[in-house]
Amino acid sequence: ARHLTRQGFRQILLVAGEHPKFVSRDYLAQCVRALAPNFSSVSIEVGPMETEDYVAIVEAGAEGLVVYQETYNRGVYAEMHTAGPKRDFNFRLDCAERGYAAGFRRLGIGALIGLSPWRDEVITLAAHLEHLFKHCWQAQITVSLPRLRPAAGGFRPLFSMTDRELAQLVCALRITFPQLGIVLSTRERGSLRDSLALIGVTMMSAGSHTEPGGYTRQGREHLHRTVRGRVVAPEYQDGEDQLATGQFEISDERSPAEIAAVLRRRGLETVWKDWDRALCGA
Picture 1: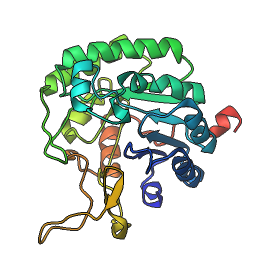
Picture 2 (picture 1 turned 120 degrees about the vertical axis):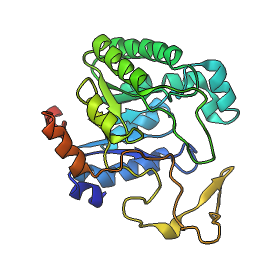
Picture 3 (picture 1 turned 90 degrees about the vertical axis):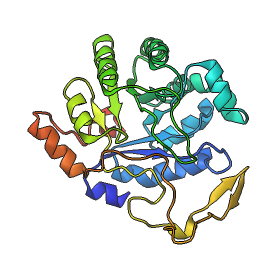
Picture 4 (picture 1 turned 90 degrees about the horizontal axis):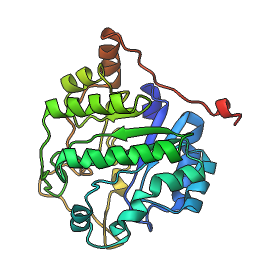
């Protein structure tokens, strides 16, 4: 966290696995309380929870909730989630509204582009957005459009989406939902991100690492895997670096300062902080 603060970040997203034994309400609240003094905005991206669980995390200082439906195709969703709490499609779908009821002021949703035909996916995503704008009208709504990339475990996307189609989607969302925040991650290459920032993207990650401990290489002695709720030691091949595995491959490896400089040269303002608790009397 101190490393990210030194780079200029004032907004942070806590991402964790979805096993409730290891990522509990109390654990998340403890993490948020530790980070809140140094970040004006703390968001979480974890497994869906009940409203009362979210309340405790909001009271600890979190103000943003991100949850991807992953796919709005119920058949594909059932194929991808064969067991466990994550199999409940409706519980995940209603997550943003439960978060809103708990007090989150920033709600982020999205679909993983590549699990089903992208046009079918985003039409349903747009319907979800319209619903949230009507029923969670006091929250800032954002959407993320991650195109699936080769990931840990050897998973490959089932359907493709071209750069031109991604640009078309960004334009369509910007026209349809002028107030919508559109997020683009470092999954995409730098030149494409620079261009999409000019036509509709409002928030981008920078200098990202998708593996635990990736920013500073600290905590290596605590690396582990979980198998059916049990903690087990990681397995390494001979000569392999003993580091955590990244969740997915990064395409834009530029530093935050480099990305900020490019945006300024293109006439855009780089905003590191867009919220403070003092705005609501906190």
